[in-house]
Image 1 (tube, helix red, strand yellow):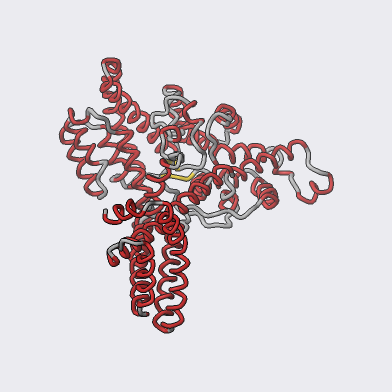
Image 2 (tube, helix red, strand yellow):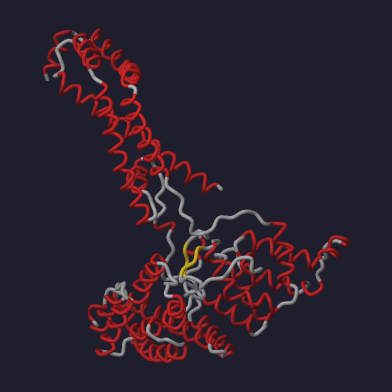
Length: 523
């Protein structure tokens, strides 16, 4: 709530500053126009008299032209703002004000390094400062060629959004490229391939890289996007593993010889971990769950500090498939810690284990008569904590909302994370007798309305510009229909607007000597 209030105040501050800037700019141009027309006579009284005469001689056509021009300019700004919002999802004026005005007003830049996540995941302490409500990589994302493309073949529609695929492209460039790629032709080709937006261009580039050398990242791309079955993907990942292990051993020997070698070793480590994790997921999808669990455990033991891929969430899902609940509890005891970022997988798996102990005999009527036992109270509290973390999940687990394919990136505590969790864990809840019944009874007591991610709201400046355009257009229409009445209102408004300036000018004229004022007006 504090963060939301701070964000609202910052937005309100930028809105006020922009509005005042707009009004003062309009005032400046009006005064500039008057000075140009009237040529600034020598005496202020003459100036005021000339202004009054000028205002009295204005015809209704002038007011119609003035308000019509203002409406046209506001309409052009509105059209540009709406186009920019539809394309980029934000207001251009708001973005400019946040980028340039907020630092001048002492605001905090949300994109500062203190608020950003580290890509290497070298320490858990760096993750403590990361906000939970942010976009994360989905640790259980599907294979594009073998799974996502099946949806495209059947429906003819794309399962992933452009925003999601753009985030994945950024991840690929972060994990699979480094500054020394230009020294190796195959890696140089792959560096360009990860930036390609066309899938066929990426696949062609990967084949081109393999013609030059056994490139691990080229095999990764083909396994992810070209392979049409999990078996084909696993075969390509095994080839990638062979090439990736060789690069990893070579870079490991040279990692302390300079910053470039260290960056190359970090990249080779990321590639190796990614390959082994995806191989474990292939084994899990092909029914070799125990083999997948062993591969995940070995990977977490070999790279204990590399937690950016959230391999423990893959391990939890595989252990639940084996119904190894004691092992699940052991993993939760390690990762369900206050110093680590939470997730729906951790919170709802903990709730499932607590519910499993009492759900088979739980009855709402009996519980209301005798009260909740200690075990039932623990289960209810665990569900409450899970619902508080992500209130979107219960509707998917209870099949009140239809499931869709999970995205490659999720918003922590958002609807996309709920989809990704329920897509893989609904079967585990159904397997535990009475667990969904207990969830339904407990969730109904804590349910509250939540927003659906990602729902775009119209920025303030689009509404402001629309109101300004509508107001000036209405004034132009009223002036055209009722010229005399609107002329009276316009003269009264301008007189009121110029009243403070007239008062200041009179005071200045009375204070300054006439000779000095004569020289200033000549200048």
